[in-house]
Image 1 (cartoon, helix red, strand yellow):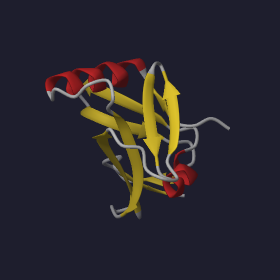
Image 2 (image 1 turned 90 degrees about the vertical axis):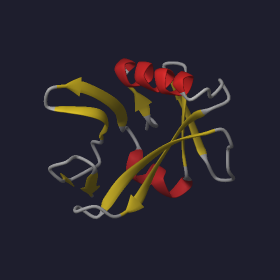
Image 3 (image 1 turned 45 degrees about the vertical axis):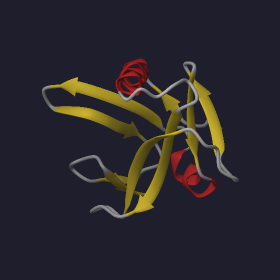
Length: 110
């Protein structure tokens, strides 16, 4: 099993945001899954610089992606992607574990 991945486009956008916010190389992307949204579960993404007990740390394309022990059950083999096209702009997740997603793509169910 693989952990969480990040696309080149998403990595470039994360690096740009970290730079704009003045955050150093000790910061990483924290991804979690919380209850909510129209499909039952929703993704949450933040910048963080503190590893917590039970965190799962993955590295892809030179970027650290961290999640908690509960969220990793929903996120295995998920890719963080970024789109700036006409049909949507922003980060989204390509999650092969999701059996259903809502129209906005921000929530899912298994």
